[in-house]
Length: 453
Ligand code: TRP
Image 1 (cartoon, rainbow, N blue to C red):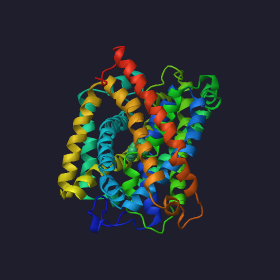
Image 2: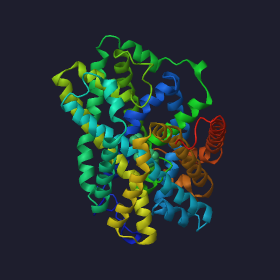
Image 3: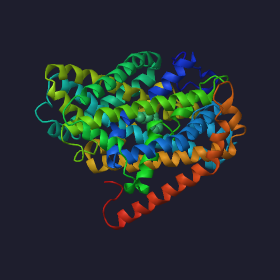
C-alpha cells in the first residue's frame, strides 16, 4: 500500500504510505517471516527451551523495542535509503556512510540464505500435496535441504522477489500478504490447539515453559539478542527504509510497539505449535536444528492422511507468503541504495541485486556447514552489530530523538528508548560481539571452522 509502488523511488518522488494500516502491514509483513516460525523455535530449542524464552522476552523489552524506535526515528528523519539517510543525518561523515554501506551488504548476505529456506518451503507445499514426506519426514528433510533442486528453488525465490521489486507491484503483494498473514495466524493457532490434544504433547510444554536457569550462559544471551533483532527486522536498514515513507504525524512509539508485539506474538505461538508436535513425534531433544519446523510438522501432518495433505499445503503456502514479504524487505534496501545514489533504473537495480543475492546463496544451497553458520551465528553477529550502530546513532547523534519518537501518539517511550540506546544497550551489545569474536578466533585456532567453508 505504498502509493505508486513507492519502494525505492528516488528522493524527489519517493511516495508515502497511503494509510497507517498500510505501513503497519508492510512492517509486520517484514518482521513476521521464517524468523518467527522456523528460526525462533529451533533457536529456542538450542538455547534450552524455557530459559531462552524468558531471556528472549526480557531482551525484547530492554533492547529490541528501543532499537526498533531508534531505527524508525532514523528512517523517518533521513527519508532516504540506509546510505543516504546516514549521509544526510551525519553530514556526510565517512564512518556513518560506511555503516549505511555495511547495512546494504549484510542485508544481501541475509537474503542470500533466507531465500534458500524459501525454496524448502516451496518444496514442502508440493511435498504436502502429494504426501511425499509422509513415510519418512526426517529422511525427506535431509534429502531436500541442499543440492541442485534447492539451488534452483533458491534462484526462483530470488527471481520472483527481484521481479516484484523491479516492476513495483508491491501493492499487489501487500494485498496477497494481507490475506495470507491472517490465514497463517489462524493455521498456527489451529494447529497449536490440535497438537495439544495428541498423546505426549505435555513434554513439549514443559520444555518450552519451565525454565532451568542453571543453563544460562552468554551464548544464550547472544542468540536471544540476535534472534530478537532478526525477528524484528532490525539492524539492516529494512525498517529504516520503510519508515522513510512514513508520514511525520504518525507516532513511532505506538507503531513500533504494535509491530514488536505482533511479531513476538507470532513467534511465541509458533513455539506452542512446534514443541508439542516435536514431543509427540519423540523428536524434542534430538531435532533441535533447522529441521525442527519441517520435520516436526511434517510428522504431525502425516498422521492426518488426506486432511494432512490439505492442511500441510495450506500451511506451507501461507508460510511462503510470510517469508516472501520479509524477503522483499531484505532486498529493498540494496535496490533503493543503487537507485538513489547511482541513479540506476529500478529494473537494472533489481536484476543486479538479484544476481548478487543468488551468488551468495549458492554456498548456502550446496554446503550445510556454510548454511548452518550463515543462518545461525553469522546472522546473529551481523544483526547485533547493526543494532549496536543504530543504537549509538539514535542515542548520541539524532537530535531530538525522543520528540521524534513521541510525537502524535499515546505511548511516549522516547526518553526511555533514547537512554537505553545511549549506554546500556551499546555496553551489552559490544560485550556480546567481543565474546563472539573470541569464540570465533578460538574455533579457527582449533581448526573447527574457517569462514564456514
Ligand atoms: N524479520 C524477518 C523474519 O523474521 C526477516 C527479515 C526481514 C529481516 N527483513 C529483515 C531480518 C531485515 C533482519 C533485517 O523472517
